[in-house]
Length: 56
Image (tube, rainbow, N blue to C red; front, side, top):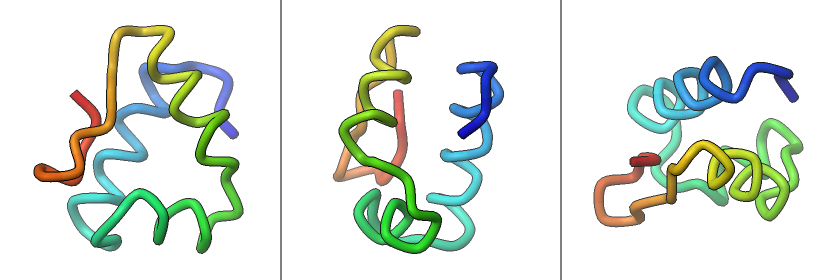
């Protein structure tokens, strides 16, 4: 997983927008630990919005 949380946010939101219909699908395909990903992005104030399929 990327070291820079802002870059990680950008990458994940791009993938959610362009490729994956859910966070679970992204995590399964890219072998990311969902809890760890959400924790990393929560540290910069972002939470997953399932309705919008993005982190805000």
